[in-house]
Length: 452
Ligand SMILES: *Cc1c(COP(=O)(O)O)cnc(C)c1O
Image (cartoon, rainbow, N blue to C red):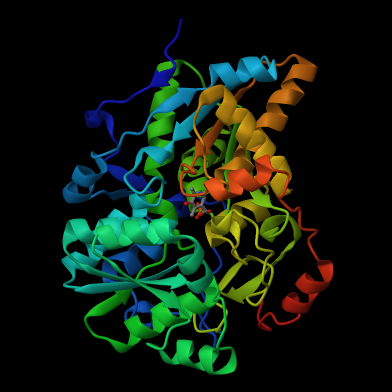
């Protein structure tokens, strides 16, 4: 019988990241300055990011070298395994072959350290002493805290207050790695103080936390800001996932017919799928590539392709992306990592060009798939990942009807060990399906900047 786990040796790890900008049939729309409406230059971003990351953001080079020091840290958990889900195939009674790329093996438990390590490295090289960031449930904050520890850079994480209070475990993880984690809105920034004076009991939001982290970085010379998804360089750092997968499929003697990932800001989906998108563009492969999002935050399936701000306080440059509007507040679903109003411009561009597909699911449907997978394969995956798992399940059940033995691959972006309260709710029938409100969306879409 063929192997269940396809492992690469460390010497077969990718030595370069893949930059999809080099292969796009049409270039990405430029990032615009909100004041002038003109494309921004590198100096506009310099207060927030080190120059090397700004260069990567706009680079048209197909391959960008992964520094030795970064590869060396990747080796703690990379290459990650590609696993055949045979037991789940059997339970689903499908002729399809299901594979998952398992990113939950990183110290932080998700794909996020792939970019955190790279970002902190390039900051360190340019003499940065402190990095600020925001985090919702804590997945990104913990990845950045881990990376900062290894490079001896101070990490300050603004954590959305309601998560800070309700989900202490990721905060403890961040503190174990030496990061300072404070609830947002805080009294430490103007943005935070302003919110608190208006709403003393504000539970916080990702948009507010971004505004606080950006403000602190912009004000201090020794401090930069780091973002865990959305930007081009973040997508690129994540391509180690797909590049390893291509080699692993070669070893398995297969090539996927369908490639699936969940999409919040787009980074794990991009990291897994972009090398397969390249094969589609360059070698005319017919692979179906599907991004999966929650019905409660249906950015690609219901949003508009327009220029919008990355944050709620309208302080960031304007990105052309599918968006629900920067002041859209999604329902409190348990997939905290998928509650972002926008989506990576690269992912949106590919969707607009018809190279990838998108679909959306309700939370009970995704938890059903999560539990089905856990009972077959053992792993309790993250609620975010469950969106991909549901889409895989539907593809596999379709194969059962048609008798096709398709190869279906998904990115298992992380484990759900800190999300067990949401499992409990599902198991006790207490999980709500939120009807997505067209009215809410139309209200926030009416506030889009009048550009593009
Ligand atoms: C953060 C996160 C996501 C969503 O973010 P993307 O940038 O879309 O990948 C998905 N899965 C897990 C496990 C996460 O931690």
